[in-house]
Structure formats: structure tokens, C-alpha cells
Length: 134
Image 1 (cartoon, helix red, strand yellow):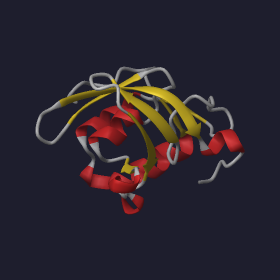
Image 2 (cartoon, rainbow, N blue to C red):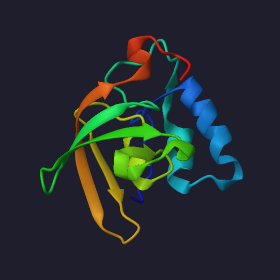
Image 3 (cartoon, rainbow, N blue to C red):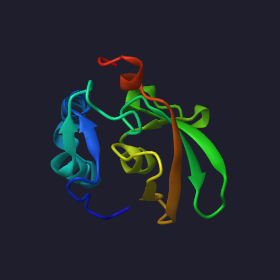
């Protein structure tokens, strides 16, 4: 995906924003840079339960194949794609972060294939359970 993230399109918690800024340091990916620069920032206590935050588990429906899958958005050191743990620095991870249930995430694979999936539901969001520090 090579689009710029428009202001107001994504919502991040201030904790996620801070951690992601430190995580990428000088290796800032252009898409993540756009996301961090343009996202609406809120406190973990005020983020809506339908927003994809770090460590959220989401159910996606592929817009082309209608295949369903469940993914958990995680930090790179916790990524296990075969087990459904997707790094926030991956094209899929960047495309999900800050979107809401019902939104369409779009990304491009390393081979140039265009992908799109609807966020069908958020099965787990740490902040919705009162976990404001994970």
C-alpha cells in the first residue's frame, strides 16, 4: 500500500504512539511514518472498543476471496505469522493499526499484489478489558 494516511482516518493510543515511535527509531517505514504523523492520538482509557490497537485480535474477511482469518497485531519480536501474530511493521500490520471494525484495510504484498480485507470484528482489545499498559 502506498497511500498517505489522512488525518482523522486512524486513531492511536498515546502509549502505542510512544512505543512505535521508539521502536522504529531511525528505521521509520514511510507508511508508519505517515500513520504516526497523521493519526488522532487519545489516551488508552478513552480509545473506543472498536479501534485496532496494539495486541488487538481481529477477524478479517478478504474482499476478494471472502476467506476469514483471525490475526493479532503485535510488536516485531512477538511476530509468528503462521500462528496469526502479525508484526505492526508488516504491510498487513500497518494497514490495520488504528482502523475500526467495519473499515477496509488495504495493503500491498512484497510481490506487489494488492490486498484488501474488511475488519469484521475486534475479538480482543487490551484497553476494552481495562488493560491500559500492554
